[in-house]
Length: 431
Image (cartoon, rainbow, N blue to C red; front, top):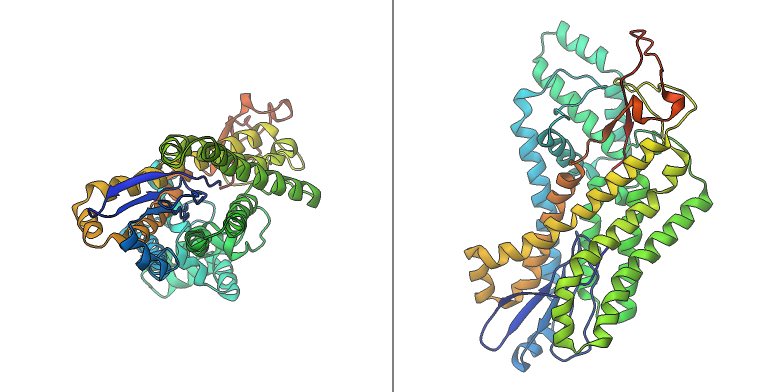
């Protein structure tokens, strides 16, 4: 993902004070205008960038807190992560009475519908999944491997089969959130989909607290590095990628995203006065953020297009062992890149809309202007935590490729189960 400076004035505060928040699209980068009336603060989830124009009276109180209410931002970060996890818990509990019989080759939710894909992704992005230890993940993985024995034992002992099926689906959720489906290797906590929001929170607060260009550049690099590594660890890994290619992709992706984020904003700030620059950045931030986010994802994932990905049938069996499809890889990379670009929208637009239209938020900010940055941080984190599964769910993870669209080597392949030619293949597009 990419982050980009965006200067967006959120609301009028008291007579003597104007608080404007610079909201990021998914990964936004904070700049500080060299003016006495601007203090830009970037936070993430996609990050929040908040810039504060103060009167001399308000400035003294902010100085005591280093320019931003860091403690409140940390509390807002925890609250945002908790809210996302509660949302996942509501979906899991609300659908517990209708879980289908467990089958490891199938899904708990109907993947032919957006709601089904969103429900699956929301549960997969649940920050609570990070709390399970390696041994616990392995235990749940073993539960899946031995699911038939568990079902037989439960049936013979007349247990409530609905609760047993639900337990097995939960085991699958816990295991698949931590273990890559292609490599069976454990994904490091910061680079799991469930770790996106909670591990980005501290980066968010660090960017809010950054008061110098070197500090901002450092945390921006950390942020883009996390984005690139999440893209890498959640790719289709059915074909190996050598170390040189990984390093080249990482350096290019991070460099390109930072260049888009800093380059355009720096150009505007140098060419125009601060007031005009803030006004222009309001309009250019969204498209440039989309470009930076897409670049990061595409560059990291692009080696897959050259190596290809394996095609499988409807039960996950490789249809042509040892062979890969570059066409499927291209479609998977393009759809994942598109979902990263679309993720900018909810993170970018929902927080300012809520702050300007919801009476509770408007009244809170009028009574307590210093709540602007923490409240924006909370809303952006929640928007990111819910927007991530929503945008990923636009495209099915196990996507289809019609036989006529596949390479010639896949044409006319027979399904050994039926003896008839395949009509459609499947591939893991990655997350």
